[in-house]
Picture (tube, rainbow, N blue to C red):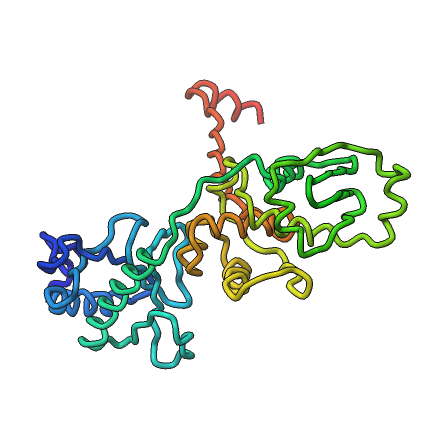
Length: 322
């Protein structure tokens, strides 16, 4: 049997009459015979699915199926699914899965399940408001993106005063912790640099708190700098969630980033966060110092130039001199 044709996308999109756009599908981690079997099943069930299907070209796809052992970096997927072989542990209940060896009805159910999830996420996704760079959180994020030797004093109208000391990694404020979120959203504040040994700090220093308790909410409210948004990062250690506010998706994001370096779009596809939420989460981790950039692939070594051997007369002359 010639299986070469099974690896090629269908010559025309197999689309359902109710939706002319087929589901783009990308698969990694299968053996050649497993992929050929899946392709053959897809061609049978495609006309019966809600949208039909087509093999994705490149790394942009609607549905990305992969094994636990092989998840390609750089894939941007609407939803992801896990290929599970018989000996492997079960996936979480909410995960899209497909058992290997494949069954025809299971493949059809996976396609329709992915289409349904994409539609629900599209309807449920709120319109993302443009970033506001005039808030206190945005101003502090820009300042703290680079080393700061002095202490910052911020008087926030309607709240009080916040002191940030990057040298001692501490901060303190004279208003309730419950007001911090609203204070960071404020656009009415006065920010001043003062000496770390300023007398006005002596009364506040005794009840200071670790600086990451302030950096974490700042990061969750603000984007990273444009230059770093396309870079892949991984966790070098987990944030201290015993002190930092978090939600279950933050735990999932940490587990993913501890295993694989990702950019914001890859993290969003793997966790269900929006692209903006994923970027803000990475920013919070970056400000708290628990994130590191993935090492770039080293360039191939330059070929060593061969030494000229000279002409026949030169070779004979060198041989005679030995």
